[in-house]
Length: 85
Image 1 (cartoon, rainbow, N blue to C red):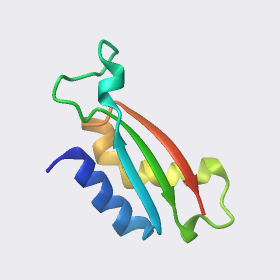
Image 2 (image 1 turned 90 degrees about the horizontal axis):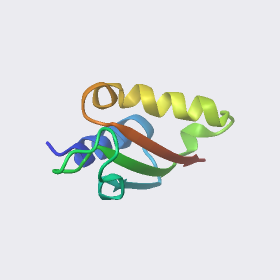
Image 3 (image 1 turned 90 degrees about the vertical axis):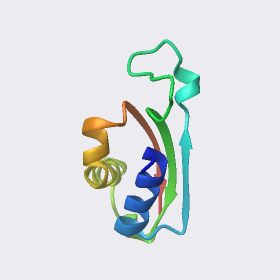
């Protein structure tokens, strides 16, 4: 499965977001560490979910990293997050 689709599936399952955008930004990182010509190494996630209500930014990020722990260990080199409720 494509990395982007795996991210979308896991985030939908874990957070039931009302807004989710997963952007592959790998092409912006040509020549950087972790870049692969086939892409899907550098992502930006914009997500809004009511589950984040009352959480600090750090706690929101921790939850996303936990949900994507498998991908972070093996397939994602860099992840940028814009999270809110």
